[in-house]
Image (cartoon, rainbow, N blue to C red; front, side, top):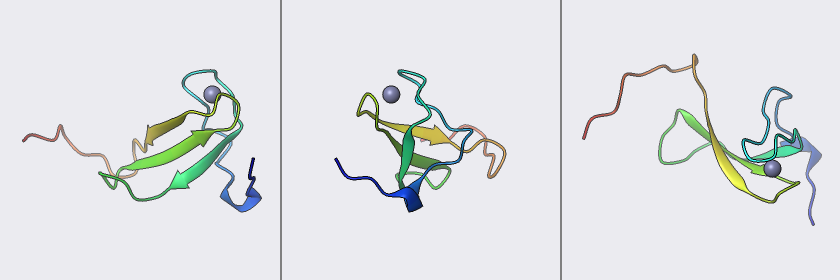
Length: 62
Ligand SMILES: [Zn+2]
């Protein structure tokens, strides 16, 4: 298991599956700029966190 302290997520981010705060930021760029990719070290599940409030946008219509 690799650990990168420099990639530590902010303390307000917790895993939506197990509620653990041991999550690391996986990527800053994804399908949408307003989302960040995180990875939980406890249940080993990747998840996205939408950065509400930073770049708030209405529903994306397609
Ligand atoms: Zn988890």
